[in-house]
Image (cartoon, rainbow, N blue to C red; front, top):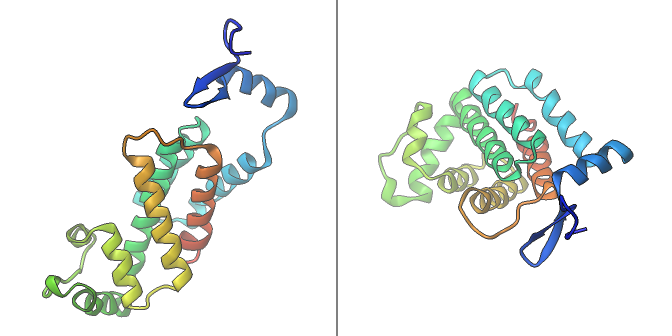
Length: 187
């Protein structure tokens, strides 16, 4: 299969993967895998639940990336959607924002005097720092904190050049976990 012209199998690292044409032929013959249908439907149903235009832009880009099998980009865009949603969720409720601001110097004493009052102020903190402050302020559950930490690591792996393979199943995991357990949980 690798020697045929055009090749049905492509050498990749220490293994092989199906060429797009071969995969498309198999999909046409046997149908699309149920996880692709589930993730595509999850992303497609989300715009009605995400009223913010900026978040919807991230969502649309994530959907496009997933559909064309750009899984690295899909992971990055899904993270962008989630982080933007988290920040807007913090800003939306005055008590949450107050709790967040009170937790900044508790978690990061060197950031004494840093106060967040608008979305652009979050740029003064690393994404990982925002997650840590959310934990210190008890804004979200331990499980959501762990999901955010784990998926930020996955986003970092996907976003930076490396030899690490990023597959559909990894994108499926990131999309379903972040959308179901963060975006939809923090409406």
